[in-house]
Length: 177
Figure 1 (tube, rainbow, N blue to C red):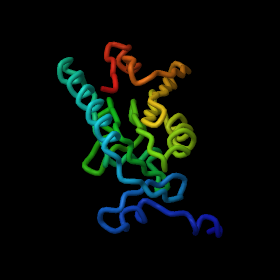
Figure 2 (cartoon, one colour):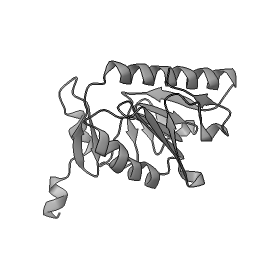
Figure 3 (cartoon, one colour):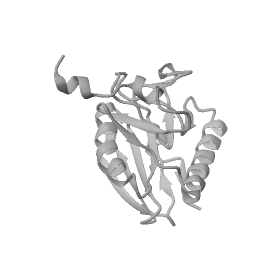
Figure 4 (tube, rainbow, N blue to C red):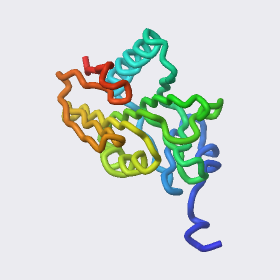
């Protein structure tokens, strides 16, 4: 075993953290997670409620889940994330531990301490894992950037706009209230 490999953290290290400590694991590196702000919680709650209501009213096959919820992005020992909201349409990826593989749609709400993580690290990880759609919601900028990876499309929206959800062929539109 190489010295570098010995320094990598694994999912077992995440599970060994003290109760109440939240962290993510990307490429064997542990990243602490900040406690969400009230505005973060409001945005997350509103989006989640709208997504769930849409799925239920359309007898949808997808399942929406919110943090803390484990996503084993590459089904390996070195990557574990907790997106703010994840929509999974292949229910075979789900078990009591979490989602094994890429969700179809992920929403991350930026906090001051997570800017680089959400805009850079997770952007590339989610794309390479096979996530179809990724939204970065930035309360400081009052802006939302959407990435529709399967369409190779990126869009910018303000909080005052209704934003179409690509995985639902734009039939569902979300807005920050």
